[in-house]
Length: 481
Image (cartoon, rainbow, N blue to C red):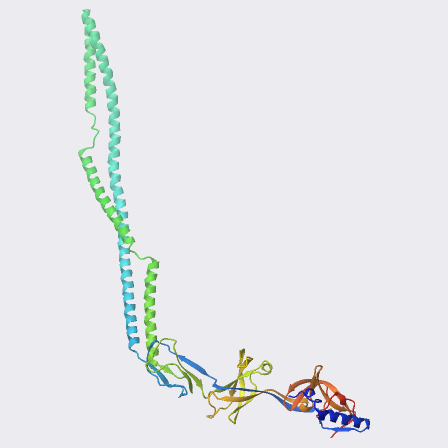
């Protein structure tokens, strides 16, 4: 595009031309100018840029296992095809790892099953000991109740006998006191030679002696206050049973506590299960790695190797980059677009691509949302243009010139670029109106190297001047030549 007002009027030729025009005006003659007509046209606005050719698909392949590489021949620039096997691994180490994982899992399973079985056995023994304790407790109580019954019966019998004996002893003491009194009375009567009194006292003494004898006989005839031999034998037998029961009871209690401490709780069982599950995961992982290594690495699409990071015989770890492949059947050009033009570009716009004189068509298919600084320190946005029909003359890594058709409009009002000017007040042009030169400010839209779209300020058919003139020519008589 040209901003004509910045150029016109600064050379001597222009000054002379302006002076000639003024003289002509004084003479009243119309000056002839090159003109064009504001009219409706179809225009296309383009943005030109240069970028590098790449495959639309670009994939870096990484090792999925840790193993030595025993098959690899790729070099940068090699052509590869979809389905081609390009990497093979040595399987010896992975086979050993798999076998070790299987043994570890089997050991974990045996440990789990063994401890669970032992726990179940201890649980059964614990239950038996707990049941025995209840039996011993009940049996001991029965024997204790039997002995208590015998002892309680003997206690009641002793109480009754003692009560009767106490009564007899009281009567016996009373009779003995009366005997002593009668004896003393008889001795007094004898001293007084009172035969009748002696006789009476003697009779009383005889009766008292008989009563005392009867009371002693009653006292002697009372039952014994000790257990009978049978009762004693039964209590001894009960005591022996109680001793045996208590010994077994104590032993069962000890066994119960011992077995209880050897029973796995739910958390311990879960821990064993988790350990076993982890070992199984180790087997699955080892099997998966072995399967991947056995398969090797295959190419996903036709392409070219743009980077190679390993050599045959290398020992790679899982995640190591192996090589990078860019597609050759689906190709793009990545160009940098400045902040002035990026707003005009949209996905789907058509483009022309030139590589070493070969012309191709393409389509904008991706616009990055990140601006990156270039060698000139000016940030640009990467726009990717995909080739519509690439051929074997399109080489990855070559530089390509791209013209993006950002705006295609049908039937818009335009003027030639030579008629367009701009100053601090806006966009304008000069036109011939009623035979005189007039200045007209306009509103512009799309711009191409040939035409400027006018959205306001001009009408279809207006005659615009394409020669170089200045505001000094305004009002001068003019005509088209």
